[in-house]
Image 1 (cartoon, helix red, strand yellow):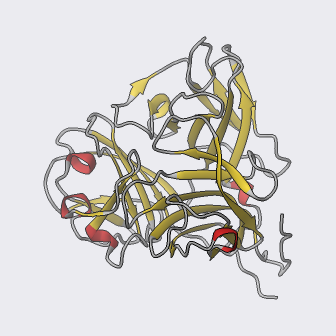
Image 2 (cartoon, rainbow, N blue to C red):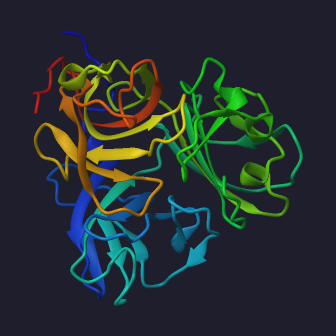
Image 3 (cartoon, rainbow, N blue to C red):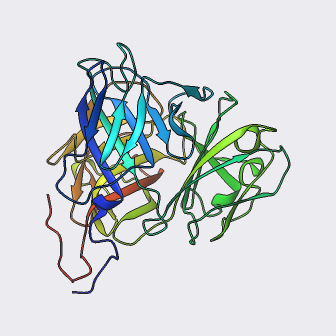
Length: 339
């Protein structure tokens, strides 16, 4: 059987960690037994509480926080994530910190910045002019860009480029912090397809506010590790759409893109250890976990198992982001097990 990946150990570049807040200083060590990883991007959500999603990265610094479910400007907090450790991260002391509230359970999705795994973090200052090229270090074309204006609370300040959003994704945009459908707007990506060295922004404040600082998280597909695609719903109930990724997923984020009204649904194998995967969080809301709209994670992709606006309404288009727990077939030709 042919090899399907150059990344045999996805945990060297992506990890999902569960922990319980203490309200006091604590260090969170990744509890898998695979390769140690110092994270560069940490995205945290409380599971049994309505605290917002907390996002920090190593480019801005550990104490610089943004929240995916709101358009708020960047904040500085010394009682949230305080350090990116060699195999985990540290949390500061506070009785009500979103990432460390006492007795509250949390999940942390963590990535390492690396061209090998197709992940780059870019910070830049906007100038409110059209057709501006921003350099990146992927050495590959980005297929997904999640971009935040750090100084502007514009309602659309979390802009998303997804290469399978439409047939011409450079003309359109999605917004991470709302339920809107994809919309045509050349002021976001200036109708320019990203390249292996730059992505292009228009004059819109969300991506190019004058004098504003912006942060962009860029991802390029890597066979056997990450996939950013789309599918069309079929209202198939328990026998819904099968989506091939080329790996057993660890995290899948789904979004109805052709129509308004659906959330950004997040599922992972740390919170659901067996199928069906019905433990969902929503990137655009602060809601606690819900048990709803099940899907199955398989050895080579995922399959929708329930009807609904969030995952497989008939004829509607859905985009997704997926990251691997194990490649379907490793570089030695050995297939992975199903769950």
